[in-house]
Image (cartoon, rainbow, N blue to C red; front, side, top):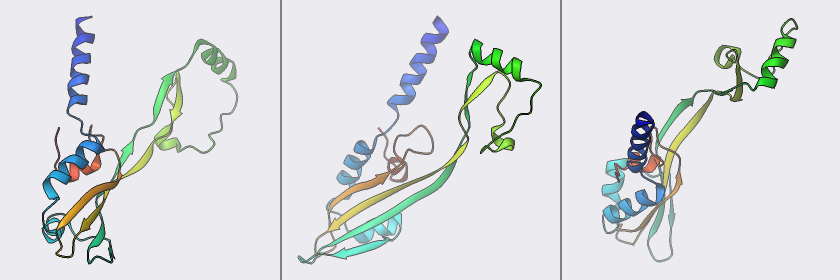
Length: 162
């Protein structure tokens, strides 16, 4: 019981350190509104597109932090009925349809819940400026999970901590 309490406290501590997209939005708005868009792009890289506004301002789309991570296959233990069925089936030929046998070979006594996969991670922000190039608004428009325990790739890219 003591061990499960300690593990629960560790899990809560890890979640407390996670930053959400909303927290990342608030942090980057506080840091960048009123600053030069040139300073932002010098630090994080150039925008992927720009749209000129009638008032002389510009709306930029910026993307960054692109990476990939591999998520391992997920399994669960077989139920008693599934084990009994498997034992009856043992002498028959097993055909794997649609799976990668090298990566997703189901261990004995387990049922495959989801195969291994690759996820693309990244951050996208919309940055509005006035005619002088000063940021008047900035918000994330696409934010995936982070590489680690973070709920926000943008938080990781912009160095936001909770």
